[in-house]
Length: 302
Ligand code: NAD
View 1 (cartoon, helix red, strand yellow):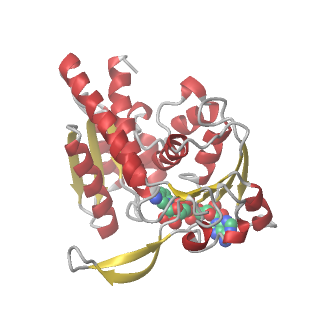
View 2 (tube, rainbow, N blue to C red; view 1 turned 45 degrees about the vertical axis):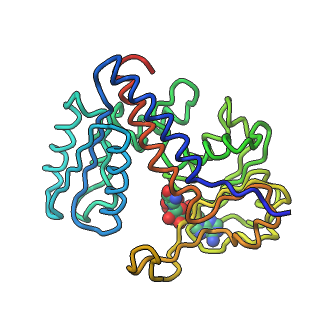
């Protein structure tokens, strides 16, 4: 039987409606909207398109949004001053510095300069620590892992006692999602294994998984025979595997593929996310959710 396709676009729409309703309610009661600034240094085309998508979503939800674009030769000190300006701006609740930054800037230094209470990306060491502790300590779960967890929960997949295998150990996806799934609480309580490039038998681990989360960045890495029948497969990978002409715009666009052989895997899995249209749309959505949360924390209503 073919797997149920978990559509990130549909789940995104539901969550965005929930966020918009809450934004309107807060606006009425407290006269304030969530404020999000995205700082972009330079003109990297991929970064511009990510920032534009974030800003458009924020606008649609009625956020106050600032797109602060800076020249590629902006000094590290000037960037740190800019971050500090937004740290001290009460109308801004979330600060996002778009990565990658130019080579002359130490991105760690910049991310660490963001006020942890405005760090809606969840990359500041304070928020990484809060995530590790879990429970009420968590303020801003990083956006892609938070999106993955929402997709699993909203699809009705049982996580408690489930064997979760995470392929990849990056700081932005693999490690945080593994940490989130093992916490005590709803949508978690799983038994988690992380596998990576040095793992001896990747296939054997994947085959045990009730929930298989793949974030390696290797197209077609996970084969259908590595999937336990009925498992939930979350494919985080976004790999450019070619180019095509868009039917909508007539422009050249990238052909994207995930880390899982989707067509074959969907015949074995119980649930599966497509690429594109799976995890991707959830990331921006969770950024909006974190920014709303930041406002609620600042109002003492979170
Ligand atoms: P990364 O390169 O930082 O980490 C990849 C991890 O996968 C590493 O820990 C590595 O050990 C592991 N890995 C790589 N090849 C492997 C192999 N052959 N076998 C076992 N493990 C292997 O990447 P990342 O930032 O975590 O991103 C992973 C993928 O997810 C990329 O394709 C990226 O584009 C995508 N991504 C998507 C979103 C989204 O919003 N949809 C967000 C973040 C990342």
